[in-house]
Length: 152
Ligand SMILES: C[S@@+](CC[C@H](N)C(=O)[O-])C[C@H]1O[C@@H](n2cnc3c(N)ncnc32)[C@H](O)[C@@H]1O
Image (cartoon, rainbow, N blue to C red; front, side):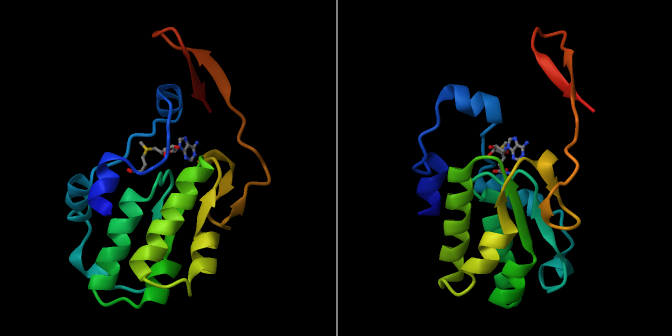
């Protein structure tokens, strides 16, 4: 299933949508390499918190969850310390589904729903894990490449 996901995860994405949102997901071997940077003892620490602020279909979060479980962290602790934010609802749904599949139970679906949220990172208050009350305002600046870019 996960190998097939590398080729196509079942969500139809137009070229325009991929370009607009930057929906290019990290291949599993690259995620593994990234995870190798993390100190070995962190995987087994039930209190460590992991966040992917633009989690897509869950490529990074799924690997983290597997590594946490393999290190002996309980399913409940592993999923309670895993957080993701993603703009597109279909990616969020797939990410939640993949995490539940790894846990091989629906028991923690409420935690998954609370921890993997559909929002723009700019509209989400990470510290209090809720929508931001004060929206970040952007100014748009003409970029030298012809488009516009957001600046704070
Ligand atoms: C380059 S992909 C990376 C996904 C995942 N982290 C990975 O490495 O496979 C970026 C993801 O960020 C989402 N995204 C784009 N703008 C966002 C925003 N402002 N807030 C949250 N997610 C956003 C896109 O929909 C896309 O799924």
